[in-house]
Amino acid sequence: DFSSLKRPRLAPIVIVLASVVAMVALAALAVFLRQVVATRLVLTAALQVTAVLTATAEVALATAVFGLLPVPPLLGSVLWGAVVPGAERHLRDRRVLIAGYALVLVLLVSGLALAVARSVWRGFFGLLGF
Image (cartoon, rainbow, N blue to C red; front, side):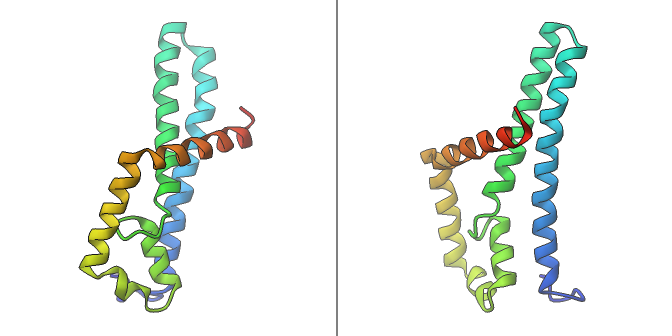
């Protein structure tokens, strides 16, 4: 509940955007560390650490993008509730929350979330020059 803060409309926007920036920064750091690790460690160790760094970057980037969906259990709903007047009341409705969880489950189980994450991942690698 952000109503007790000094700026209840601005606080959720700042929190959501800061979390997205942190996840993208973590992904970028993991991608850049892959090259450092590849040149400094022996081959077998470098392959293992590179795989962990790649997985870290993928999860961080997917979390940043997927979390922006305006579905109640995700951070995007907090952003939506702060930007659209009256939306916060609807987002707190139990039926909307249950439907949001069901939608997230369908996206994850069906593989649609993975397809979106892969295209974002390719674009992110392209921006970093890899």
